[in-house]
Length: 159
Image 1 (cartoon, one colour):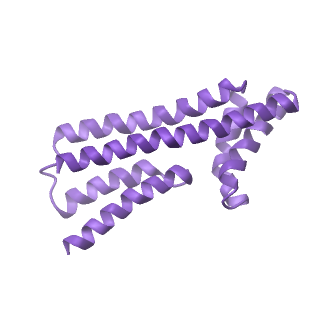
Image 2: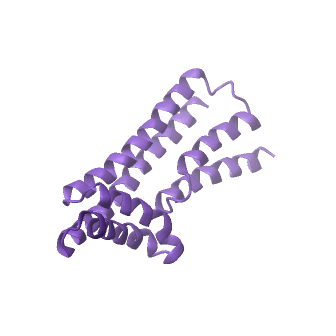
């Protein structure tokens, strides 16, 4: 039965990485869910207070990294808060409107529309901000992937 438990726990970890590509999947919930499931199925004894403090700090780091990666990507390419909001909205609805390609096109088009409609920037400046949102998206996924991998490594060190 232990093998089945481990398969489920590892599946939760894998789903957390899929959430880096499909942001509608709450990566951090699946990752922490894997830790909690281990505790429930095996034992919380190895998952000490220190482990949970480290996990909480890394969860906060995940959210901060996500926010700042997107912010820096958009700002570096001349975007404003309008493109950040447009990018976020596009990231959430893009994959539903345009499956697969919507993951990239949603934030790109959302940032462009945000700049055009709210800031009334030129098309060229808006497209540049849209490109920045895509750069931010990829850099965010990369940084969050590293943080999640470190969290899993720490989990295995503790158990």
